[in-house]
Length: 362
Image (cartoon, rainbow, N blue to C red; front, side, top):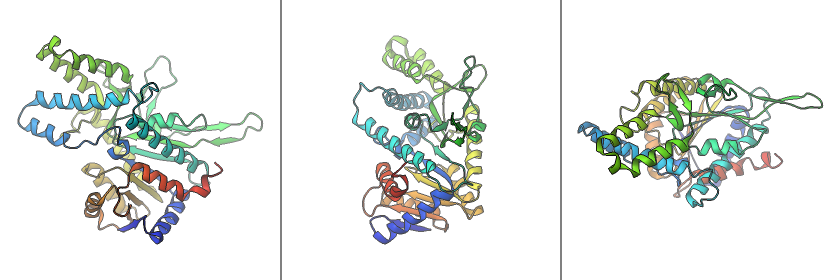
């Protein structure tokens, strides 16, 4: 395992050279965790442990209420992302971080000098929120992103989740000379589901949904608890929890049949991408506490020596944890900011300086 302190000039320059070469020629993968959506959304904290304790005590109603409140807080944020009339410094800061990062990725893909490697990147994320999709949609017409949903252009069909969508690319053809160019493409792979996923009661399919309707329903339940009565309120809460297409933050979170199938199909895609020759996985805000994902990454690092894992380390405590997880791997690099925190914004700004010459004229 290697480490790079970006406050050290020699180590910073060495890292710059490594990353510049990697992003020019490798298969690009990112893994985002809760840290990328901070400060708009706080990390899970002890929610999973608290819910598990309630489940073990057989206090299932309290566990469901805690999950409902946890989800509602994230929906409260998501509903404001596209509302320009509501000024929220934390949301605006998080939006800016995502937008700057996706814009940087767009420019990197546009300016890759390697004709063999396609102009595409994967962003895997365990976050439920919609900041990443929002940032992708701001990039304009000459940029494409796949979120895994098919039939988006069929007016008679609701878009359904299909992992094969991540294999698609889009090309642009000029009017005059009919020259065809593949557009920069980002696959947004949401490993734990998303706020705008809904599980259809009849078919069991995961479909795209309008979060404003879900949020309105949650607010109605929350604000009319006394009017609904305890039994009715709990029934409504359970119905909402069961219909939202996310992996819930509790120990048995992978047992829900529909989400379990989607989760493992996404994990297979994740694993397959890491097995490709000359790959890079760059993680930001991800703790690696999720054993399923950590084990897949460690397996890929063991069987694919051409894979390089770069971990953006938030602070010293995180460094110790990553060191414990990956101390035996020579193809892992920890990136930290001396004695200072290393946030998503800090990471983007540092990467931007590394590729400044390449993207200046993009």
